[in-house]
Image: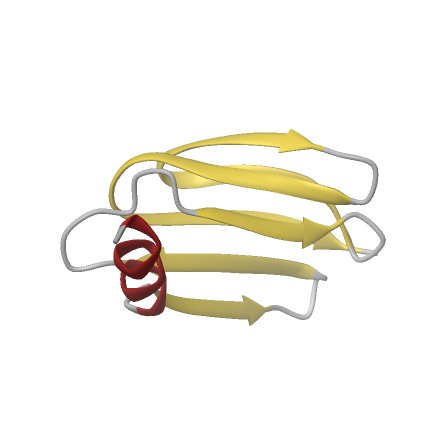
Length: 83
């Protein structure tokens, strides 16, 4: 089913978050075949100034979160300033 494919694909995404002493966190994700449409929510009450560093993604927001949606590719990285 579509749900099973989605859940399996989601579990295959490798995530990494690294914070530096200047208060910037770098979020990275990779997948063996494709990250298209993978979405991550980053809480607005913890981060500001999100910026895509590598890969293709769109950053939107809702009332409580930054919504990062990967457009295409097998890897993505973005940064955010810790509050």
